[in-house]
Image (cartoon, rainbow, N blue to C red):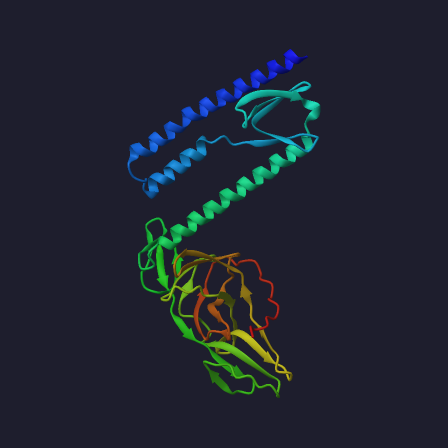
Length: 323
């Protein structure tokens, strides 16, 4: 018994000496690599080196055991009642009985690791995309379609085939039911209930579209992010009504407008793309900017003269203006 113990101690000592020799042999190599360069690498070289080092490092996964412990392994395979795995810690192939492995915890851990890896990839892609957008020059021409470029001046543009057409603005009025005309600002009357109609003069917009699902681009002068809505106008008499604003005796205001869902995409600083969630039926429309105090009365109006009617739209529910 004494001889066996002494033999085991001798084996462990020899193993520790071997590990020390390997570690000391690896250290000068790292120092030599640093001294041969003579100066720190630039950011590009550092990035490439970081990527190469990350790729060279072993990527481990956890092989959970029923006693609550785990082995960090590069890969494993189950052969009958044995599990053969490559240990990341010891850089060697090892085996254990398969009955010691908690397979449910191992599979759960692998699924969680895959989910985290996917999230990291998506975050990295989003950060890279945001960096590219931030680097774009807002004054430069932007290609919105093959061979089609957005003008460098600010404004709202509609894409019609290979043509980029600027949309002009019209001034909307706010008219009381009693016939009183207000311009540029809304004046609530907290005591007497009132109804105010936001409308654009004229039955038809000057600019006409034939595409039922156009795309719009906006370039702002101050690189702000405007909150835009697409509103279908209701022709009433000689005007196109965009919004009905009701003021109750309590002073509460309720706004009702037929808004159509649009999605905003950031193209560059101060440049935004707007896409539609559904085709537009023939009729009168306006793109409006929603400010903190309500709708901006300078709107981009247009009409749609598509040949085939689009699906009927559901009426929108009343919208309370922002306080």
